[in-house]
Image 1 (cartoon, helix red, strand yellow):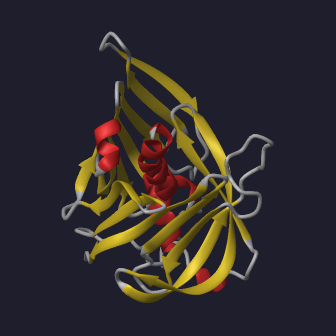
Image 2 (tube, one colour):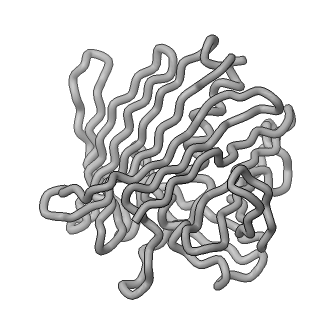
Length: 264
């Protein structure tokens, strides 16, 4: 059951990281960030409901220093039977510049059983540094600085980078690379575009772009060999992430959209 409960947090991370390729859109290209938008996903393992992931954007702009930013948040929690055995309540918040669409601040508050994390990352774009403040066990805070690339994203802003991209510009099996900073490391990730599919969802039958992160296969991996993680994003102006599916040696785990509220 511990493995099953871990999937709630795992799918939030997939929604934020493994499923996206990020980039900084040209000035004339519309990015898909809508104030007041909300998406809710159900995380399941077979017939068992393990948890819920919610993505939302604040209805108002906020300021980070002098920068006007979107405030985007992703939360994950266990529910149903899984919640009796394990408690997960994780929150990721990104403050994304309304002009460059690069993040200036990234906050992680995670509570998973007895494990607690409080972390704040400030991106200094002028000096290409990430300033990470993390709470230690004695409730003291430590500050560390790490070098970053010019267009690196945090895990939430990377999510919106994918939605801004246009799948119709890609050919099947095209790959895209991008950088995401987390904790103390910049990860270089790759995504493969697998074409279009019509997907049955709670929102109806929707035409979607299909992607898969390229993951090096290890001997002891619980994932299947080829394209073990798949994600579908609606092929319309809203670019809604509709579904994530993970093929493991122990069965399939899915995150499916349950609710969508349009923003503006």
